[in-house]
Image (cartoon, rainbow, N blue to C red; front, side, top):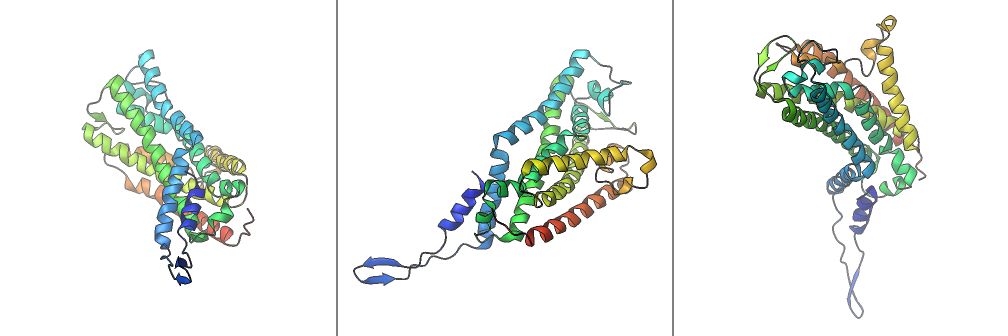
Length: 309
């Protein structure tokens, strides 16, 4: 199901002018025009089917899900020590509790894989429609440019949360299968129950997904600038990589708070006791600022754009 199906549904629901019921008899059989809310809901469902139904997106999600499995199997085969390991992030704690497989996978994929996945969806959102020639037809149904952008961004948000939860869920299942569960030792040294550990993992997913939604807003804006979805995807990916690189240069510490990815690693604060919400607030505010600014830029650009394809 593609976005063209939403166009077809909307066109099919346009009112018929007259209906001939007999010789010389013509009656007005105009059917009620579907509400814009109904069209938008249909369009949103079609957009989700388009995102999650494409084989390339499904292949990308399978690749994301494979990473935590590889981590868990590798740690099991090498029989790494539960503490004092040299692995990045939470690797040294994996063998002590399988929940840390999910956290290690999220930390590992946050640097490149998850941003690439979101960049691919965001870059294709508007540019893909323009490239395939369906953008102009989408705008002929009672959707409108503003509502089209809203639906496209809503699809990006759903995808960002989905892939983040997917990585965590697969990592959790693989970790529990190979290493078991039990009480979770937080970064502050405090032990909490497994149930609370799951809630903290869910909070980590939410925090990271919000950061990816900010990247998606930037990507939506970039997608309105071109008709080449691959070019938009590459540009968004390069932007996130550049942000990570600049964030690692200590001489640019004055710039770090304004970088898109600077606050992403603050999710570790959710694994301390007590949780430092003051450390999380800048990341949420930064993400909100990026979302507002770049969605506004996308609206201004797309609203004035001459759509020819």
